[in-house]
Amino acid sequence: MCAIIGVVARSPVNQIIYDGLTVLQHRGQDAAGLVTAEGHSFHMHKGGGLVRDVFRTRDMRNLVGHMGIGHCRYPTAGSASSVAESQPFYVNSPFGITLGHNGNLVNSDQLRNELFAEDRRHVNTNSDSEVLLNVLAHEITDASQGSPRLDPDMIFKAVSGVHRRVKGAYAVVAMIAGYGLLAFRDPFGIRPLIIGRADTEKGVEFMVASESVALDTMNFKVMRDVAPGEAILIDESGNFHARICAEKTQLNPCIFEYVYLARPDSVIDGISVYESRRNMGKSLADKIKSLGLRDEIDVVIPIPDSSRPSALEVAAKLKKPYREGFIKNRYIGRTFIMPGQELRRRSVRQKLNAMAIEFRGKNVLLVDDSIVRGTTSREIVSMARESGANKVFFASAAPPVRFPNVYGIDMPSRAELIANGRDEAQIAEAIGADAVIYQELDALIEAVRTCNPAIERFDCSCFDGNYITGDVSESYLASIEASRADGESQTRLSSYQLDLGLSTVD
Image (cartoon, rainbow, N blue to C red):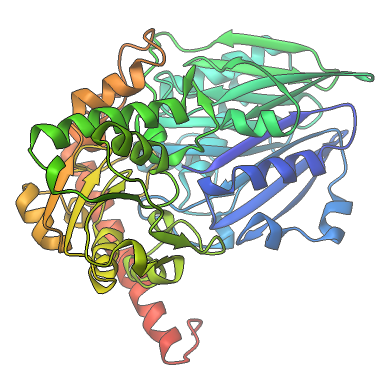
């Protein structure tokens, strides 16, 4: 998850990056940060919360410069929800580097030990993004071989060194003081990264971002997606350099981006998120028909917002009425990415309110993009029954989530996943539904791949347990689940303290 943006412009970039981060706020609501470059100096401001709450007018005035990067964060496996781990991170050697990262490293502990014992670099937080920054800094030191000046070949050589050492998923934006903006993507292309340009009266400007919607809204024309293993360097003069820096590359984008994470108006790796979700609805309707449930359904109701395109197609193909049965409070964050199970559960009813007129006396089919922990689904089914529904069927546009995701999505613990160890009937009982209908994995892949047949394989690890990087061990899964359990315990304690009116700072 997380959102990253980098801009090289002919005018101040602070407002461009701020607006871009606001557009990508759905990717992370825990913290936000922005760094601009003015000559050899960096100006940074970051903090916890939403973009609109982190940056004030006085902060924006201090963020001067024509080049900058920004980040929206949400915490992943075992990480803390704290300002200390907000991004971008910064190191002053060599040359001064600042970095923002979307993804998750699966060998961060090993790298942390190497940095301390061999590279003589200090990592101050538990964030794997700070580890990644220090690996990059060390590789730049090696590539420059003591030279007081860098060139593109040295920088690309350093990125090659990062690819050799780092395992996992990562899309990165970074700045090197006095040199330019650097962006690169892991050799499997798991997390998204796209680049665009704007031709202005003052010259060409460039933006890299997690999703194309940021480019669209800032009037940048999409050039292309950053390729797996590719690095992009835009120097202070606006010169564009690109090179594949990994020995072996293959494009395996995360399929969960299309299911839930990305905005529907984005295009990722040539695939329209909106069109792929419509396709999911068509194949889901076929599954519902095959189970003989069509005639039992009176109305199709989406769980707003990401399931709407799928629900519309389900209703159309089943020839059933489509109704908006839930009203969403848009000032509540996305419950899936809220840190802490208790916080997610308590926020559901603040986030959604049912309109009884659409439920009373009816057999309703609720359509959601996915079912992960089941917390939200259970509350929603309960709301439908309280509103007078006779029967409640629950359909998921995605297959059962049975395995941890280790590439930057906050669902690492198998114990948390409601589909782990349960069949559809048991899941329906657990969430209180009369039946649960899941998308087939082959149908999901086809729904997405139809939009870009050139992509041969997706990362579907949370559905099939196949970790495409080939370096995820059972011991690693156990370690992140232990970290997750510790984090959840602390969140529950903090929530309990807040309920009692106690301070969480001791």
